[in-house]
Amino acid sequence: MDKRTCPIGIFDSGVGGISVLRQLIALMPNEDYLFFGDSKNAPYGTKSFEEVQRLACADAEYLLSKKVKALVVACNTATSAAIQILRNKYSGMPVIGIEPALKPAVLSASGKKPAVLVMATPMTLREEKFHQLMMRYEQDATIIPLPCPGLMEFVERGELSGAALEAYLGKLFQAHLRNPVDCVVLGCTHYPFVRDTIQKMLGDKVAIFDGGGGTARETHRRLAECGLLSPFRARGRVTIENSSESREITDLCSMLLKI
Ligand code: DGL
Image 1: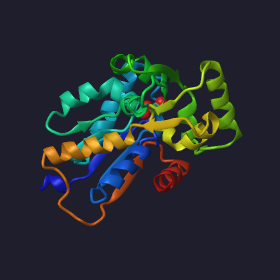
Image 2 (image 1 turned 30 degrees about the vertical axis):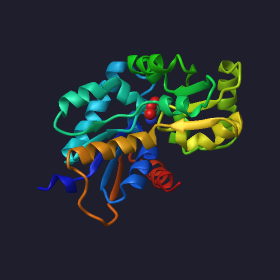
Image 3 (image 1 turned 135 degrees about the vertical axis):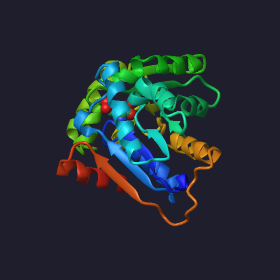
Image 4 (image 1 turned 180 degrees about the vertical axis):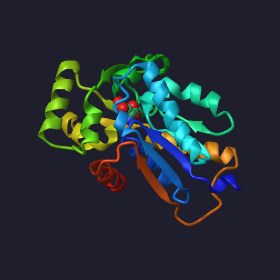
């Protein structure tokens, strides 16, 4: 079997990873993709470290059973908990994770020390991986971590705008934002789907970053390095599966892919 023709496997705790899938498709439209969302067990971000490790390994194992050629962990929370285990377990294939896009946010500020708000799940912000990342940039920016328990649930419900979402965000920003910020990093793959509402609430001057583009570029780089890029020119096939078989989730996934 020519491995290059196998799909790229991607997983997330739910529908959020579709924001990464969209970037992958934009960069490599000729690849086949198999996306698995674990909405039945979502959210991951408020679970224990061990539980997320266990769930992430099960998600990966499922994709591997479908003969994927690479694994993209389209979930910041699962990346913090399990990327090392997955890389050790599947050392023969590219395993790509995602992390909050602090680097581009910090680099975007010309001449002054920017205030960067990092929105992510409680687990992502608590874990060692984020602390290491923060240490790398804390000389150059004032970094404000903002755990957002409950925000991914809006996206899982397909509630991407509206009064309830604005009230939730308003409370969060009011409690944690004493001063205006220059940039926001969306450190959870669900949040790009509520980006417009976040922008509306913080104002047009605030630059918003997410890690989807960087993850897509890194996936391309790793596939090229391993000689695994698809030899086909035609548009590839995109398959979306979810542990929740509800009609609402199926419809939501198709909608999010098209946004
Ligand atoms: N989409 C996930 C992330 O990027 C987390 C959402 C959750 O399950 O809590 O962190």
